[in-house]
Amino acid sequence: MASRHERAFRASNVLGLREVEQRQRRQQAILGGIAGLLALLAGISYVLVEPTTLLVPILLLSATLLPAVFWYYPRMALFGIFGCAILFEVFQTVPKEQGLTDAVPFFWNINTMFDKFLGSNPKAAPINFFELILIVFSGIMLLSFATRQRTQLRVGSLFWPIAIYLGFVVVGFLNGMSTGGNLNEALQETRAQFYFGIMYVMAVNAIRDRKHVDSLIWLSVICIAFKAFNYIYRHFALFHAEIQDQGVGSHEEAFFFMSFVMLLSVLSFAKVQQKLQVLMWTLLPFVFFANLTTNRRTAYAALTIALPILLLAAYKGFPKARRSVLTVLVSIAVLFPPYFIAFKDKDGAIAGPARAINSAISPNQRDSDSDTYRRNENYDLMFTMRATPVSQAIGYGYGKRFYTPAKLDSIKDIYAWYNLLPHNQILWVWMRLGTLGFLAFWGMVCSILVYACRVIRFQERETLKPKPGDIYPRLVAFYALIEVVLLMVFGLLDLQLSNFRDMVFVAVWVGALAGLAPGAMALNDPEKRVRRPGVSAAPRRRLPEEPRPQRRPRPQPTRPRSTR
Image (cartoon, helix red, strand yellow):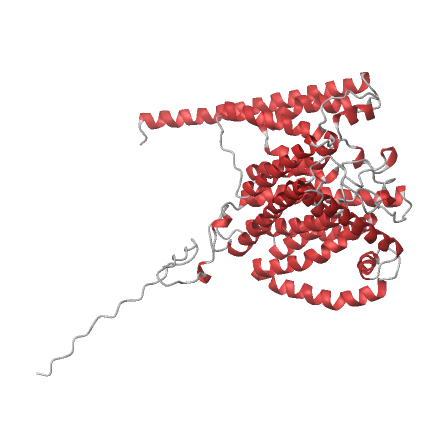
């Protein structure tokens, strides 16, 4: 029978749970009331201030509702930014706001928003709406740490390589400003680099288990599929089913469409999310067609480079999928040559991949002119980097137009930043940061690749969160590895290392890798450890599901029988 103290403890415990539930209900009711009031105020401001613009309601809701959401649901900041980065373009590419998503000012400068919607430029600080959200979120987190006594901030094992690279970016920014660089242009160049570091830290702290990874996967699929249907609509409704020279939207959409293909491949090899795979296979033809409307050769070049890495990593990381990997290899070897021969000189959507690959082998006049332009651009970048010993060491600096001894005037009418943000952004990093910063950049990239490879190779044998033998750390490592490879190829060929959206997308997956699989650099393979004289190998760690090894009974010595 329970004692008096035990009964009192149980009663107080029940009362404590009831109080917590009542407090949560009150908080939800207050939050709902505030949201309703703000929605009413936003509607009133929309009617009274300017009937043709949503700027005032957007700013009002952002300044009041977002702090409450971030206070109670801080993880929503990461998922919201991640989804917006996939959905909303940086620049408006379709006139008259007919493109739907590119008319949303998520990445627009505050001054541009006022000028666009209200016809006045307040000449405020040069920040965009996304940065305003980051500032609000940072303030809420600092207040949360101070009041709730939560001081634990995880940075992950990949923080220092990223921080070292960003340190050189700061040096390049100061170098450019001290030598006559333009502030707004320097900010445009460096924003994406800092977004990468910020989103990495946010993802490390927000992604803790497989539920969070599932949310990222579903959010990626839904947003990319929406963009695919949006671009198909543009192709037929706005451009009358004609392939445009510069595509029907921004260049970075091809990166997201290829990311969709890679995500489907990773899920298929990992044999997880079966229902989602069915949905993605259904959406795959629409995604491929939307990619054709972008008219970017870079997408097929990236697919050609990433596919062998994908198959090799799948063969090593997912032993149960090796038969599927071999099936894919045989299918490509059998089906691709006839397809390429039949469609390399044809028109139409189905011939797009064959034409893109054939343009690299036997370019037409347009492709030849593009290749010549890129060679001249590479020459100008290297010429600028080698101009002085200082630029060779610490770079030319941000915010300054690079030298153009090989003329690049052919596209200045359609691309005003032709001598600021070049297509080859691998050499752009070298030119802006010098040899030291270039080494730091590749140190960061190689650290991410090595970290992902170690998780893929050794995760089954060691203890990693959330539990030993869980496939999700390897899945995230697999996808992060492929995404970094895609980013490097797109950065080499098509302006993507300075693009806000691509850098945010990849940073979140890299942060998810570091958050879900901490300590991967300490992993090793005990079965392949080399035994050296005088050095004893540590015993292999036994997994919980493994049976304990049975000890063999030691043979007892037998005495010889006496002959007496």
